[in-house]
Amino acid sequence: AKAKGRNTYHFYNQELNAAAKERLMIENELRIAIKEQQFELFYQPQVDCQTLEVVGFEALIRWFHPTQGMISPVKFIPIAESTGLIVELGEWVLWEACRFAKRLDEQGKGNNISINLSARQFKDSNLKALLSSIIIKTGINPRSLHLELTESMLMGDVEIAINQLHELKMLGVSLSIDDFGTGYSSLSYLKRFPVDILKVDRSFVKDIPQDSNDMEITAAIIAMAQKLNLNVVAEGVETIEQIEFLKNNNCFIVQGYFFSPPLAEGDVAGLYQQLALK
Ligand code: C2E
Ligand code: CA
Ligand code: CA
Ligand code: CA
Image (cartoon, rainbow, N blue to C red; front, top):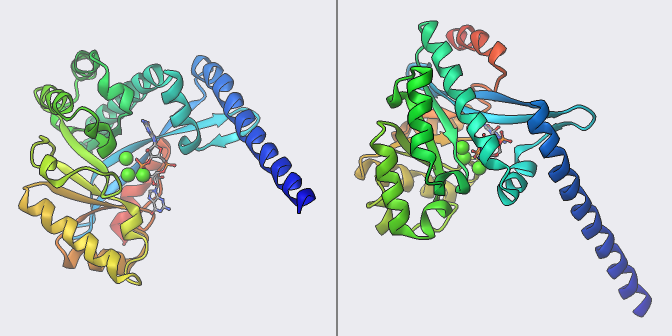
């Protein structure tokens, strides 16, 4: 038993080491990546499943490392956040996504652009001024800019968060709560947050129609959003059954592999043709 315990410990230690090493590698490489611009934004369409019209895109960052290949944002965003590198990276995302939106606009494909904000960006007292200058300099319509926030970002100091939300709303932008239902926001606060959109998290959508609890929860989130006058976007939609369920429950804007994965900008034009054929 003793020997086994030692082995287990040894194994655990090695695992920790590997995780720590990877973290350190990412941290070092991130600094280089920012300098060398190894990032690209991909865009995932949000589709009105009644009309098959593209109503917007969510910008999702991709890191193409010269030797490691693609590194998932799930891996590097938290490290960018804890090291503070997210401030510079997040600023680049905002500029890049708004320039993309402007280019679409110039092609007559004017559309909403949703951008993920990190906790640090949201807390930054410069955020409003930065956004204001990006909106002016890119010439985008602020109404087309949707900022995605998560519940946990809002639940720390609620009064400060509500203030910041009001400040941002003054720019004319829309605010979304991302991954809705996975955090721990209280419903009584939800009423006080000046937000416009709820995004139903993929974890509730993915097992529809097999999981009846998930169907109940999804239907309840949609119904509640409607009562609070919020728009709803369902994320992670992969099947026609999920689309049918969402439609029957009055959620018409969907995002997911069923229509399209996130695309490089060069592939966005082809998307419109592909949707026309569906
Ligand atoms: P998120 O904001 O919840 O983004 C949705 C994630 O689900 C994306 O993963 C997207 O590619 C993926 N997805 C979309 N449709 C489907 C589907 O039908 N099935 C499945 N299985 N997945 C789907 P991605 O691009 O890997 O991004 C992961 C997370 O990284 C994002 O989750 C977001 O929290 C963060 N992130 C990505 N880009 C940025 C960024 O520019 N800034 C910040 N702060 N965070 C970002
Ligand atoms: Ca998001
Ligand atoms: Ca999400
Ligand atoms: Ca998510």
